[in-house]
Image (cartoon, rainbow, N blue to C red; front, top):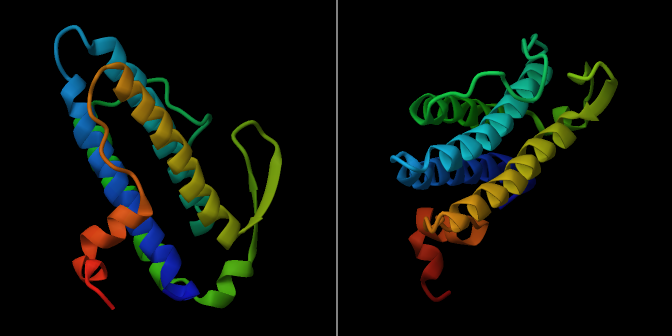
Length: 169
């Protein structure tokens, strides 16, 4: 997998892992588990808001967020759909980005008012690693509720979408 195809593949992996984790979280949508569901939705919404903030930076458009989470907590269905749309945006963006553009620096302002500067490649890497970190935290919260967490690994994803990788060379 070359450098120009790695980022789109990583964003496809992120999108699949996000949707798998949201599907597992649906098990908490039951009486007596409202607090656990709310906690996971807050973490997942934070990831989504940060993804949207950096999407705005990459697109040169205002993102409209004042913080890295929203005061209201979305429903699981609303978050699932919003995450799917944003993940698809990143897949398309990474897939259409010219290699030379990866080095381009973008100046922006964090939600705390501090200035920042990152290359497009660094921003994309941040979005990927930030999501990975918080998916792990959500997985732990699912463990505490005895809800099986879905596998979340690049190797499993690659072999799932390309089963021929399991065949002998």
